[in-house]
Image (tube, rainbow, N blue to C red):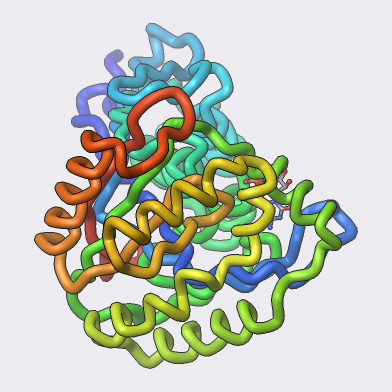
Length: 330
Ligand code: C5P
């Protein structure tokens, strides 16, 4: 007997990058993580993940093939762990049961820079969790889905919720916000050097482990405004307040001192406030449209070619013009 699932087309998911418009660190928790207050949005820049059911008679483990950017060892990839979490959470009660859910063959087209503060790996994991459940034709109630996402990583629950959100706690408290009307343009400049998030949080702790109260106020204020909805022009007008509103900025510079002159040079070239996403090293500037962001990208590429931006890391930075997504909930 052939497996009915094997005839189905693969499930395909876009896994968007995220941007922290604000990031306040409230304090260290007993579990070693930090409580955050951060406004996050999803971007047009996305990885693409497909998941196909492997016919039961072929069996074997889940597999992952990665095209595009180097995402590190496949065995460590969070997307594979997400499928394992999904299988555990679904259990044996799936439509094709009574046995465990079949293996999946994953293909990932990696476009989001890795270890860059854009949470590409976490987004892939959310897409894999969600896509695996769909590929099996299974059901997973929202609580179990959320718990599985939180086990995978602090940023994963945000991606399950989609859209713009206020994210608190370690990352598990996600409140959807109405967000920004329109499609603000975003320029992302990612130096060619991976930055380790645990290292940045450790540097933050070594600095005394206290966030700046004004960053938290900015974050709370923005969350309030985005709950009601902002126009693109209103968001862009706030860029000067948002760009410094990241408590991890100084700690990221401790870990990667070259980030400071790099950020200053970007400001000189673009004449726009330059923010840091997450623990970095990706830097961002905001625009009214993707076209304006693309023009800024061209300016940055020219400046790099002219040597007006200092080199940092092992090569040219990645330069992306993209947009903030309005986004629908998964
Ligand atoms: O949860 P995730 O694996 O993405 O976190 C990576 C690291 O970042 C953690 O090991 C921890 O050092 C730090 N972290 C934190 N507080 C958070 C999120 C991450 O201290 N809220």
